Image (tube, rainbow, N blue to C red; front, side, top):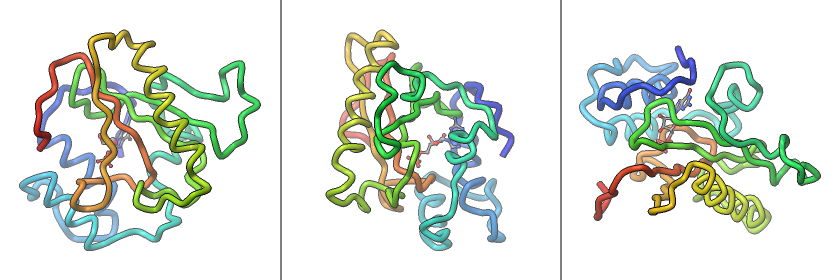
Length: 177
Ligand code: 5GP
């Protein structure tokens, strides 16, 4: 995809195009014909990639494509962390709030989504949430923020490498859509 890591203004169409670019690599569906994120997620479920298939996030981790990185464990004083506990955080290419950051494990270790979590993942899952808190402070989100983990087609997940969304900088609504 043509990701330059920069923040684009939110639009429903661009959101759908981002999702579609990850899931429609081998289908004949046209991204522009999709009416909603929900349909994009359903399309993803209809043509799921192999569980070990790399995602766009691997390219970001490997610095093959640019991203606006806001946090990386390897650059921290406590970089003695085991590989399986290291995280990377970068700004979402299609932000849904003034601050929208994705926090991911640098090694996926089978965690395509939260529903694939096993007991061995407890440390990395805790670190993803802890890091969200560190970044929220770094970003000055002192009045609050929201954490989202989309899972599977019903959860509108589009990238199958577990990630925590950190959203802030505006009043959130409840219930979520
Ligand atoms: P999901 O829908 O799977 O919960 O969230 C995936 C997120 O990844 C979306 O919010 C989408 O905008 C973001 N995303 C997809 N591709 C890229 C990319 O290439 N770069 C960045 N920075 N974000 C991306």
